[in-house]
Amino acid sequence: MLQSDIYKLADGEFNIDSPQQLGEVLFEKLQIPSGKKTKTGYSTNVEVLEMIANNRELTEDKRMIGKKLLEYRAYKKLLSTYIEPIPKLADKEERIHTTFNQNGTSTGRLSSANPNLQNIPVRTDDGIRIRTGFVAKEGHSLISFDYSQIELRVLAELSKDRHLVKAYQDNQDLHDLTARKIFFKTEEDEISRHERSIAKVINFSILYGKTPFGLSKELGITVQEASQYITTYFEEYPRVRKFLDIVTETAKLHGFVETFYGTRRYISGINATNKNIQAQAVRMAVNTVVQGTAANIIKKVMIELHEEFKNDENIKMLLQVHDELIFEVRDEFAKEYMKKIEKIMENTVKFKKVPLKANGSVAKNWGLLK
Image (cartoon, rainbow, N blue to C red):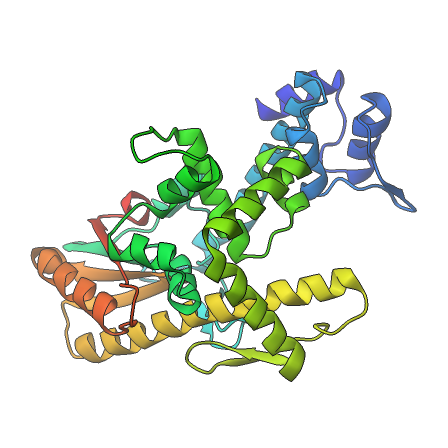
């Protein structure tokens, strides 16, 4: 069906998996502008397809073929990366065993391989369907706990921005708060889902050092609009700007940055004369401090949980997916362990200003966990 839709939009059949044929269809036959041609042909990577899908200057059909191609690529990846190989890796007890690497990422996060169980999509219906294939053994359920906005909470704690800190102390919706600030809404004004969605993107974009150009592409707006959103954000959260500047200057002075708990990462290119290289190094430095601190926290919590449950036959920690932990527990003890896990996750690490919040759910398979 998806393949047929693409052929219809392209007005003819071709090999969708061939970058050369795809490039010729998009940029020669359909005359979509901005096709960059190299010695091997046109680039048709995800970034190019996203630009086509979000370009409001194109016709609906041309944007649609970009969207359909992205969907096609996503399906192909799910099929080749998860659906076909994972069942073959199961042992005689129908268990899948991944391998975790302590030094697999530059920010200190654990990485997973053979197979990578940290990378199964969670925000798509198809990713959720794949997760439903991972089930608890008979008489047991799966428990999932993840931290609520842990990296934004780390940013609030480290920057000490009073608006961010107060939002978390008062259990406010941070994305709602940011929407009110960037759209100049009062407490009485209603925030639309669209406005909150934009605010959510901006909150995380600032955290990951996204440029006005990058933000404009993600939101489908002009660079000028994106730049204004970023300017307004820093006006409303001034200590965040100061924190980012301090991290940048520290990296330039010492050549490295450290997380809250002392994990060090050397930042190459931080003093480069090439502005693009330096900008990338700055993003790397900030991301390391924030994401690395969050990684330190989840590791501390995993150690605490292991000590708590290591001699307990009723529960077993199965998987870590960055800020999420998954357990298998006997059905009759699920509620009891939910309380224990929540207490440990929220109290093992205590920040001075910002509380940590963990949310849990229980289900018979991974796909049903919230």
